[in-house]
Amino acid sequence: MGVIISQAVALLVIASLVAVAARRLRLPYTVGLVLAGIGLSLSGFGTGTSLTHDLIFLGILPPLLFEAALGIPWSEFRRDAIPIVGLATLGVILSAALVAAGMVQLLGWPTHPALIFGVLIAATDPVAVIAMFKSIPVPRRSRLLVEAESLLNDGVAAVLFGMVLAWDGIAAPGALAVSLDLVLVVGGGLAVGIACAVVALALAGRADDHLVETVLTAVAAYGSFLAAENLHVSGVLATVAAGLVMGKADLPWLKKSCIITPRGREFLKPFWEFAAFVANSLIFLLIGLAVPAGRLIGSGSFALLVTIGLVLAARAAAVYGIGISFSRTRWAISSAAQHILWWGGLRGALGLALALSLPPELAYRGDIIVMTFGVVVFSVVIQGLSMPSLLKKLKACESE
Image (cartoon, rainbow, N blue to C red):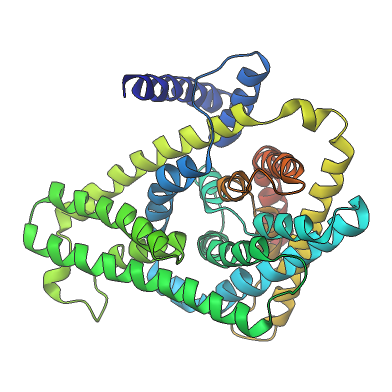
């Protein structure tokens, strides 16, 4: 236990120093953490803590997802639910298919590992997206679309990832089986999250103590995730659903006794902001420390450039294709918002967690992990650094 605490303290000290330096250099905090982690890794510095699937899923994701969902405005989310769901479902499927096809045609990968990589890299990552948008001003609707999509599309990607991983390469699952699994995993995750939130709110309504109420939100965040994973449904969507419900004080189907007190809600925001800051600090620093820099810079650099190009092209096809389909409806997405959706669709912790969970005997496992790290670093560093410039150009074009 003492070793774990020492490692966590060391990481937080480094993250705090990076935060101070990033602010003075006017760099996004997450970019500074990843670059610092890469620099420490190349210098041979080690913290003794490694990036694992369990660390990301069980330790990092629940507080980040819950904190983000708490801040989603319910009325705006409901208004744009149709395009958000379209991006989170059809967008993920289209992006995964295009990336997989490109890996097969351009890099000569076998179909099975290409599909696995296409699926795990298709979903945008809520951790990276929300962390980036906290440091730069983004139009309100564009921010809602990007953040809400990133919170929802992980459930679809996780279902497809499990199905593709189980596919033996001989008989592909039918469309009906895929649809049923999607409904079960997505619907089950949402149901578990809502149930956990309602129970937590019912208890909080009888507590009348802001500290107890805050503890109950933490129980809902982690409890919904763990309960859903144990039931083999989406833990990500369960935590998101719990956050959405607990973030809305006056849902019509909730009793008045199931409402957190004003003092409790006032205390919740800084508490969860602190929890998200700690989780963000750990995950992005560990990503930088775990980057296989030697393989990325060496013989795999050409393959990595091709892969990054494929991921960006597939994301563009999904965003602009779906954008066109809504162009003559009340959910029309402006050109500027589509550009933000495309370039702001970062990859991060979720894709890495899925890649690290692959069985050791899987063909191309090492290549999948290396390509995933490469795409994540490009997303966080290059797209994260260039996003403010893109927003300025879009604003200038709109004002002309």
